[in-house]
Amino acid sequence: MKDLPARRLLLVHAHPDDESINNGATMALYVAAGARVTLVTCTLGEEGEVIPPDLAHLASDREDRLGPHRAGELAAAMKELGVTDHRFLGGPGRFRDSGMMGVPQNRRTDAFWNTDVDDAAPYLVEIIRSVQPQVLVTYDPDGGYGHPDHIQAHRVAMRAAELAAERAFRRDLGDPHTIAKIYWNRVPRSVAEEGFARLRTAGGVNFPGIAEIDDIPGVVDDSEISTEIDGTAYAERKTAAMRAHATQIAVDGPFFALSNYLGQPIFPTEYYQLVRGEPGAPPGKREHDLFTGVAP
Image (cartoon, rainbow, N blue to C red; front, side, top):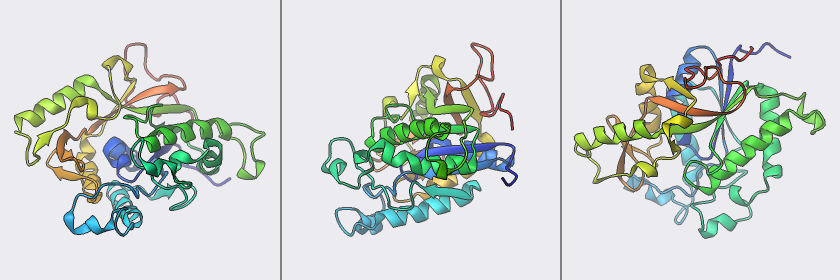
């Protein structure tokens, strides 16, 4: 086995742009610190709504060429963050974006949501056994806000973590590997409230409206937060990565909007809930490093 970096972080996301919104500062911080950061994106995001009018022809109900375009946006975003190891689950296009919950696209035979978890998970097991991450970051069981692909990404990530540690599972995928810590993406409600207060003070910037706090994926009571990563030194890189996802995100200073044009704050400090592994802080305190207490 070739030498591995002392710290190895794996992030599992549903579509291009999710990683930059949720974890952009964290990813840039750990890359700068010498960690190996691996991003796995589960779909190309083919069903996304397109913001720039001159790119509207790419949408799934027209030319259906949005997926490859978003793959290019993802590559540009990862360049901004310094991440060199970014992959699509099973290869680009193996699993199709399922669209929002309840739409006909959910039922496509190639839709990620319509894929058996145990059919998708082995692709991630292969990556886990190759990269050997100590830390995994993904969504909570609701996918943060109920999107079927986010829910499925959670299920696949958690199942793959289990399978990767099993000696009996698919020996051709390599030796077993146990991930030391698993985190879910979170936003403390107090931080969300403060961010929206700043947005209202700024007059909504150039967006016609302001989103609601509960529109933000993963907002929870502050007591559920185990870990906060101060990424303020990497805020510009995070913002640049979000700008790279131009079909999906409009950025205005420290705020952004999705295709609904409702303003939201950009969070340079990113928050997590430890759901598996030993906490690296005493009860009532927060970790400030995802790798606290993790052996190389």
